Length: 409
Image 1 (cartoon, one colour):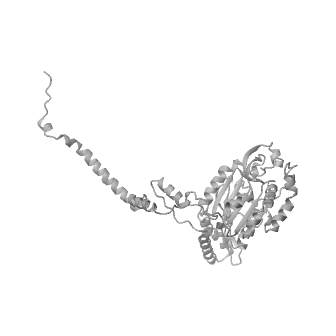
Image 2 (tube, rainbow, N blue to C red):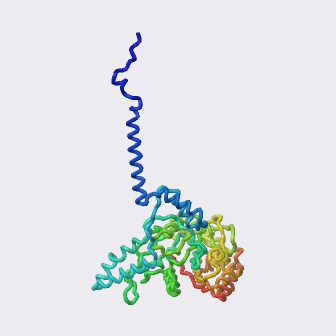
Image 3 (cartoon, rainbow, N blue to C red):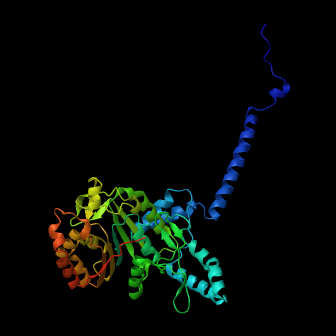
C-alpha cells in the first residue's frame, strides 16, 4: 500500500493564508520606512515635493513662455532626482570690498617693514588664493540681448590673454600711497588655477594686464561687465580652452561676465572656411606662429602643414553680439601672425565698426603687425601695403589703436 498522506492535527489546523503573514509584515515595514525617508528628503529640500511640483506645473500652463535661462534651469532639474542648490555667487564688487577691508585691517596691525613682509601673505594672500570656483555649476547661456561690453581675443593660443583680462578684475593690498604691498594672485592658463604672482622687471603686472587695468580704471569700468569671445584655430588647444571656459564661467567671484572660446576658428578677411598653417617648430612658445598666411616663416619651417578652420570677420562679430543701442566698449587684442592685414582691410571697408562708434561705442584695438614674419605673402600684398590707409580710416571714426605687447603670459 502507498504511504498515508494524512496530515497531523497541528498541520490541519493552520490556515493556508497564514504563510503570507511574514511577507505582509515586510511590505508594511518597507512602505512605512519609504514614506518616512521621502518626507525627510522633501523637508530638507533634497527632492521636490510632488504636490508642489504638480501645482507648479499646472500654474505654469497659464503663464507666458519661460525665458531660455528658465527653460535650461527646468530641464536641468527635471533630469535629476535631486534638486541641486548652490550658494550665492560672490560678486566682484563684494570681493573687492572684502579684500579692501581685510587689507586695511592687516596693514593697521603691522608695526614694522619686517612684519609687513612676513605677516601679510599669511593674512591676505591665502584667502585670495582660494577664490577659484568652489564647485562646478551648470553652464550658463550667453546673456540674452547681447553684450555692450566685449573683449575680443584673436590668437587666443592657450588662453593667456583671456587670463590677463580675468586678472585685471582682482585686487591685492596697497598702502596709503597706492603702492602694491601684496599683489593679487594670477590665473595660470596652463594649470587653470590661481597661483602666486611673481614680480617681473620690478613690476607686478605684465604689459597686457597693465594695459587692460589702465583701460578699465580710466573708463570707470570693471572686468565683470565684459563678455569675452576668444578665437583660436590650432586644434592642439581645444581641450585646454574648453576647460578654461568652464573655470571662468563658474568661478566665484566671477571676474568676467561670460566667456566663450571659439576653437578651430580664426580672424580673417571673410566669413567662411579657410586654412590655418600650423606652427609645429615652437613648442616652447606654445606654437605661436600658426597663421592663415602660408608664407609665414614658422609655417614654412613646419613644412606647410595645414588644417581646415572657420574664418570670421570683425564686422560679423560686432553685428552678432553688440546691441544696436545703448553704447559700450569693445577691447580687441589681435596677434594673428599676418592675419591682421586682411582683418583690418575688411573692417575699414565694411563701415560696421564706424557705425557702432556712431551709436555710442568705444573701440580700443591692440594689434601686433608682423612685417618681418611674412615672406612674399602671396595674396596678401594689397592688404599689407594698404594697412596704414585702412588704419587711418578707422582712426578717423574713433577707433583707438595701440601696439600690442609681444609677450602675454
